[in-house]
Image 1 (cartoon, helix red, strand yellow):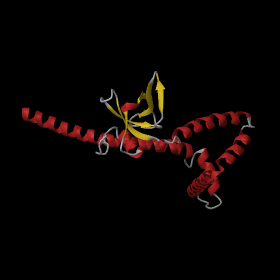
Image 2 (cartoon, helix red, strand yellow):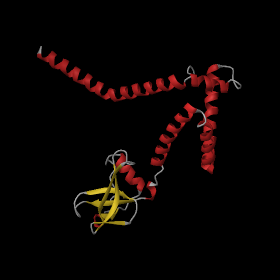
Image 3 (cartoon, rainbow, N blue to C red):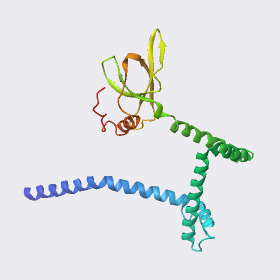
Image 4 (cartoon, rainbow, N blue to C red):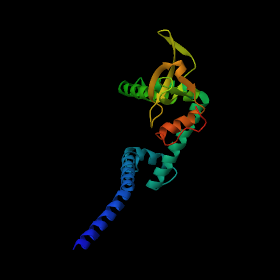
Amino acid sequence: MALLDRSLKSVAATWLAGLVALLPIAVTVAVLAWAFALVNRFVGPGSFVGGLFAAVGYPFASHPVLAYFIGTAVLVGAIYLLGLAVQSGLKGPLTGIVGRTLRRVPLVGSIYDLSNRFVSLIDRKQGADIGAMSPVWCFFGGAGTAVLALAPSAQTVAIEGRSYRAVLVPTAPVPFGGALLYVPAEWVRPADIGVDQLTAIYVSMGITPPAPRGV
């Protein structure tokens, strides 16, 4: 009886081990299925937006599904051409024309202003010239904890008769945010790494170590 009990416990433990190993895969599949269902609900062939895609593709194909995919391809191509126009320096004039046109419509203009401010905020955040910053080591206390940070410039600021430097200490795993600190200038030393490696270190939450070049 005891042997049977141990066998059952062993089988149950093995089964639970397999379940634990399968669980991350199952969760990933469930999340992907949910995301696909959500996208299909709003832009799928049966949605209102999908109907617009199909209407664009109907001149090229009579089958509804084929027309939908052709219309989607046309939209993707049109967005790519718009991107080329924006990169060529036409972003300002295009935005101005669209903005002036939509703002004349009362409700649509208000919605456009709100969405435009939100997108501009994201664009400024992503467009910050992080590449122009310099990776540095901050030794708090002068010879204490070493923190990998970004220095916007080498300029110092006098605070109560002492020279300080501004440094941005990123957050892991999202290195594009963090804390802006003013630390004594003598605590800051150049880090012999690039911004790309600094980003990789924070994204990996320290799993990717700094290159062994010393500090």
